[in-house]
Image 1 (tube, rainbow, N blue to C red):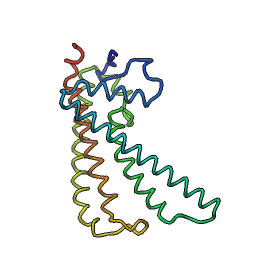
Image 2 (cartoon, helix red, strand yellow):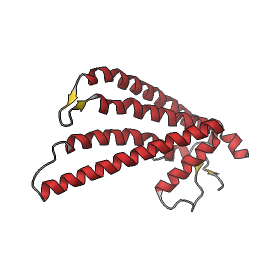
Image 3 (cartoon, one colour):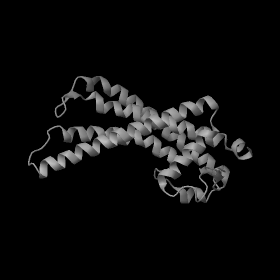
Image 4 (tube, rainbow, N blue to C red):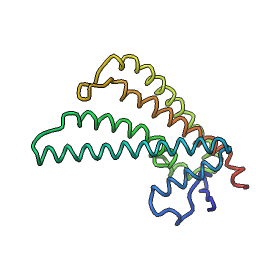
Length: 198
């Protein structure tokens, strides 16, 4: 499969190869992975694959729990006491794990209209500058999440009777994944010339 580039130099899947956004995101991630060194490619595939599997498991569990709660509440007239707390916990993990994959798929909100007006080199500088700024934010959130784990371990979530460290742990894990995926995109942007010539 040939990789096409838009005028700004970022990877785009070939037109017609992806009929839905999920396939387009997967193709984009695969194309980015091909630019990485071989050992990093294997690690990247493992990280992306395990994140997708985790998201699938969390999403299915969330859907099952909410469905059971709706059935029990409206058909049997009682509520499963832990579902609301568990749904909140699962949503925190779902969104923070999924943010990194959404970044790799190009699914986050961006200013493509402004970037498309720039030359390829200026666009590349803006993209790299933005990734560096967001990288600093990710590092701050990782630090804040790790720092919050200590106090959270001493508190309990009343609906599930588990430590509050479980939902707080999603913050450093999710932002570490965001930082990792940002580094992959930076690598791809810095090495795009060699890929174009290949």
